[in-house]
Length: 465
Ligand SMILES: [Ca+2]
Image (cartoon, rainbow, N blue to C red; front, side, top):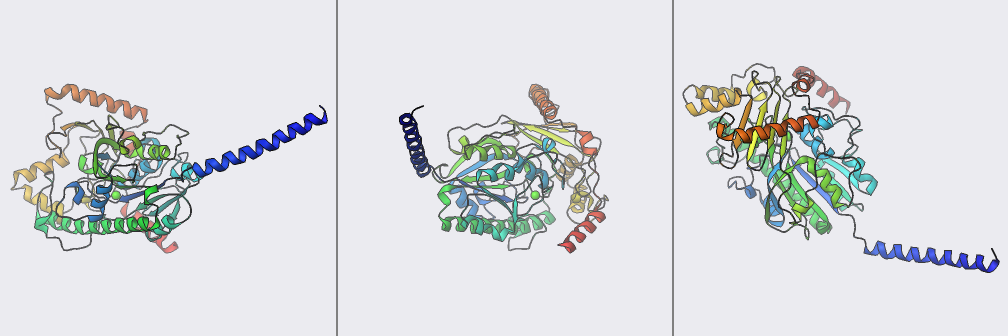
């Protein structure tokens, strides 16, 4: 090669580099900053217990304002109505039996990846503020901070994916000013004074939750990042009175509201069926990425943007009863379509016991709520029916949610619905097989909780820290 050509090539290379740099600068100028994500999680917040979901007694101005600015979801669901498995699905995008955490206080399988693995390499601060209730840490390498420190993350320089997990309105409840006679008792619960008193205190904790949401929204507004931040509020599952630890709507269906100015129309509602497994895929789509490995859910971004109205055909439920306080082996699975819910109780000869019915030590409680209900049942036919329905469940349950939203009329043995039942039953079989869900075997692999041991372990870990 002669010198003239060498010089020409050199000039071409230099020109190429200059042009590439110019192109990159223009691209960087055109590129929008990464969107921020805040997922605020309530603890045991019933879907029907806030103003924007129609409850006129407990006032929730901040949740209501969020709903006015964004989209209220009417059919959002967790996969399991208890803390740890519910959060594990939210953070991994995998259903309970696939991620391994199907029991309360359970651990996720070591090989599973979660939000920090996915989003930190993209330049995000991935932070969990407040309640954790997930393990092991290697599966969930969040930046863990106290609830009060969340504001500093919003005000910081880096794009953030911030989970704020409140402890409200989980019990024990603080006493407030609500009058027991004013509270709303849904028809699946026996309406007695003990429940009204507890619900009045529960409402007070919902006020605390609402004010926490208001504080975060105020910080976000002041930071100037509101336009570039997707804010989602979701409850983890229904509350502790015959709702959580079940696959009924009261346990699995959750309040969920999403706001993102310029992307989500203000003051709209969606009837699309959303499952917690859909959150991770949604976050992926928001940042223009796809998961490296298949996840169990799919993105609902187009629902939020108003480009689609239907999302998934079915949402699923899985409950492992061993591992909760006074929980004996009572595995439950469910599948729910737009209109019908099918529930399969895998051990119908057993009884679904919990702290509500059996206190801390597997002995039926003789005072308080449960005892009052049982006493009332001796003279009140409706209370007797509701308690019987709770304790003695058939192998199969089928509900028409359109006509029976509180699931009081089991249609499983009604021949008119046999085709619907068999279709949903087949779908549940398919899901369990796909998930490698071992049913009763999985339930029995979880030891019953030894409350004394757990209390001692808690005491020891508090001393250490
Ligand atoms: Ca919870």
